[in-house]
Length: 130
Image 1 (cartoon, helix red, strand yellow):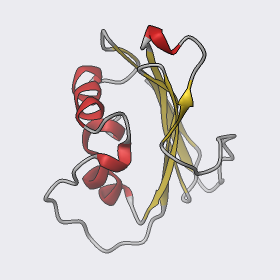
Image 2 (cartoon, one colour):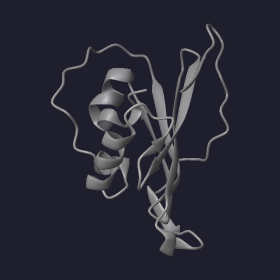
Image 3 (cartoon, one colour):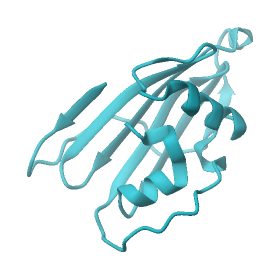
Image 4 (tube, helix red, strand yellow):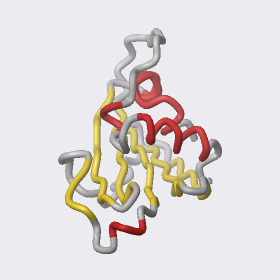
């Protein structure tokens, strides 16, 4: 697990811009390999990232098998994850989640900004639980 916490400083992370969750097939898409970088950055000045590999589940995600199952059920797009029935406090602490890489041979580039970490977890489940 990679974790970076910087108090009082906004961490700039070079990540691709928001766009469609699934793009054109990657070269050699027949391999159906999966290797995704999952990251989030908060306006409060902290950021973290892990690598998730599926088939078989591996990488730095502490719940890789569950995360792979959730993504498989969502067709590889975090936007298709069914939000949990969970209440979150209305505290504004913006956080932006990113997924980049390859899901079963298809390039993925996804990004979404949430009002706080609870809203992110409610919308994405175990995916960003690291």
